[in-house]
Length: 637
Image (spheres, rainbow, N blue to C red):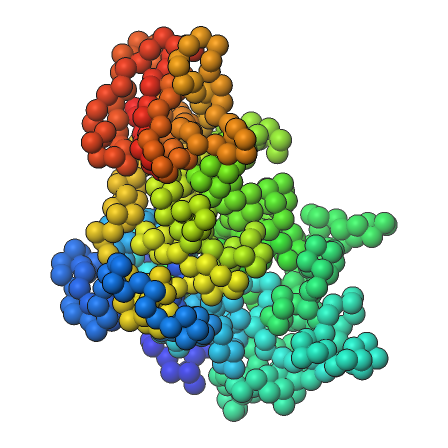
């Protein structure tokens, strides 16, 4: 679809200027039948592709036109860049863009990805030279020029759909960028703030003014003239967000779990938006199902309806849901779902970033109508360290089996309502000790990569891969930037490199992921089946079977589980020992396998095993003996 590629003086600066009838396409891409069928891939647009990579294949599998950046070669190109210069580069914009991403959609399709989750692409505060991540929005109705244009986003989504890939936009409702500055009150903040915005103490602070393109606060804190010099880089846009009442204005959060501070406070320098309020009972407690949305929330609903209508996107990942009133999230979800359904998108995907643990996340889903929670607390921790042998298998698998605790009778409820991943862009769970899975040198993360990938792709949940995992990215350090290396190289390539790109479709982890994604596509049980951790035994003797567990604080063992759907059982297993292959007798469903004599190896990380058979024996009901390669993964059925 082609759109009028407006110059900045013609872009809509008011929601009231949008021509909704002209915006609407003749037809929209329908939603998938079930999001648990999809394989997600999360990427930071600035760090993915600038379109200048040399070699490789285009979206249709033909040799790509030549670029200037040669491919990375290990070990020759690894750890060659000056550490200090390399690390400093990682704090700034580096040049990835939407056109570059569009050129790599074939790379993702061949990997097995069926949905891409993009970091926010909206226009950022011009004065913030570190907002490459996209979470500091200044204009909610435009694409940041670092990434391209609205047309580039439309073209990206159209090409993704042609290749069978859905597109999920990362969006922000909780806050805008650092679009205004506070005036320090010496009585409340006698030290002048120490160079930081004032802390939340429950009352609003006076505002010095809107920030201009240089970050200075000389503009009155009032609606701006859309045909004056403030457009397009000063203040916040669209105009409907320029009322002073849009923002809570109460300063930054310092106590991240104190209510109402974590609802009302600013997320560091990012300015909190007032979404409205719940009615309260006589004791002052929120009445959860009575919520009055603010004009700002209604404006944001219109903003994100616009992006669905314009670009035909398939879902939103909603940032910092914990910091929003549940009623605001519920209201937004209802508005967006209705609009998407009016376009034929019956299953538009809304996934929330909800910190605070599993119970809080699932309670929030129930209160708000979101489709899924992003598993960023317990799930990645247990998945990561189970694969390396440092967590109890039951501790991971129990995250998906106790659906009765949230009043759900289905054995697969969690599988539809959680997005599972083990790496991401900020690793909230790790504090200041950041590190990708393969960046864990103490535990030789790379040697366990197949185990964690098999677990992520074939255990219950909607699997999500973090960009660069398929190329063995190993960033680690005391800052988020080390988790955000450039696929296209530049000054901040992975493995402390520069000037080399990482789109190697022959990489052993890329090939492994592609194989397991293909396995997943062939077997519905691996996408929607019930899940059971299986008992094991070294000897197979009567009475020797039990669930795999840690011994002496570590587990170096076969860890098997089954996915069951209708009359099919697929048995999967990882080996948490990266030093040697491990074997064990593994219990099967006795009823489904009563008459079976053998199981076929559907896939193994050791190619010699794939296509072989193992006998079904009358042990512990019914069982098979499985051998799993060192740090590897197998599937039998």
